[in-house]
Image (cartoon, rainbow over all chains, first blue to last red; front, side, top):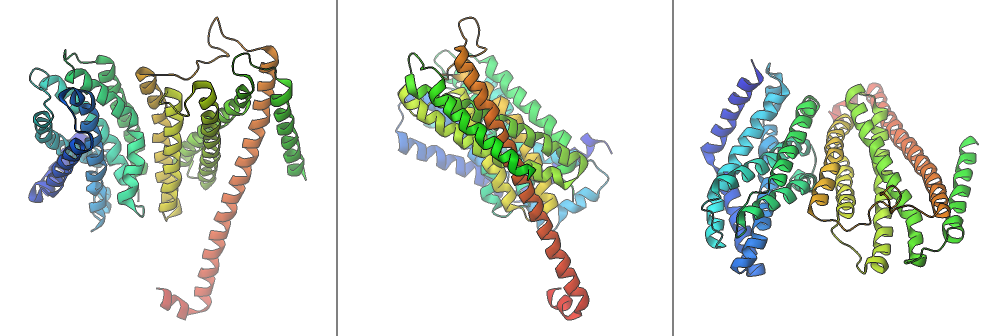
Length: 224
Length: 237
């Protein structure tokens, strides 16, 4: 079976599993909302402040949410040793990883589609006219987040204290992605929105570097 | 005996380098004495980047060959790199206050160094939290490779963003260049610091190998005890 086809089947399995309970999605959305609300207490931002700090707040909230919600991706395969079963199936390790990455991407993207309009309303940031370009930035940024996050979810799944370990491994790696995503988003929230292509290219480069590394290392990552 | 000789030679070289940095190198025209921290600062960064490169190569070599010695080399090199990084950050902060007027700034080089420090501390933490030796070697090697790939990205992103660190003085272009005596002292300091790194690396590697031997002996003793006394097997099973 080809890698794409097996990844698609695994993606369907992940989605079915999540949409039976929707607990991961609900948890992520509420978590980001809590962060957004607490931020307004901590800084009491004016409209000008929101333009300046809004992109940073939004991405910090997504990064923290990602480092929490990506943890079950591999950890929940351990309860019944289902990862062993997946590895015994005649499919490549990359298909398993790719299926999980796509599923995590869809979960985070859904959360973002719900949260970005809420953020725009609460912080008075107009989105009309930049929605398409913002979707592009969010897409590339989220892709980098789920690529590294899914790999590190597999790394930390075997360790003790894994809930704490995943953010410790993931957040420093994502520092360049945070800078690029925040700068690209800030260029869209400005008075005269103009997408900064340098940062968009940087985000694409980040995704390509770590997707290639994941593809090269996935056999070692998922070996038993 | 040979090791003792090398250690004494490295120690003598370090003392000479310290003397040269403090008394032979000429006074810097604007920063004066505080500039002399540079003779420790730059060699420490060279040690850190060499050690982390060794760790990166060792991580790949472990995945490719499955010889456990590469894992020992990987963890040893990361520990040496983290020590050098801590020293480099500390000397940089000490220099920053008198020279820039601030202890710290979020400049490209400083941020990269700090993030590398955090990443490799996380690497050591990850190793401590994984039980099975083979799995520990593999997963930490994967994380080590990701961390090493991240370093140029961190640097590039901060460089594009903002930067304040002095540009490279030695190969920095037309107006750059070092006083010849300063250059010689710097070379001595680098040549003195690298043997220290290699000695630390070798000793740490030997320690890791001995730990591994102790672990294997302990398992062998337990297996033998279980063979001679079936009751033990039953009780531990």
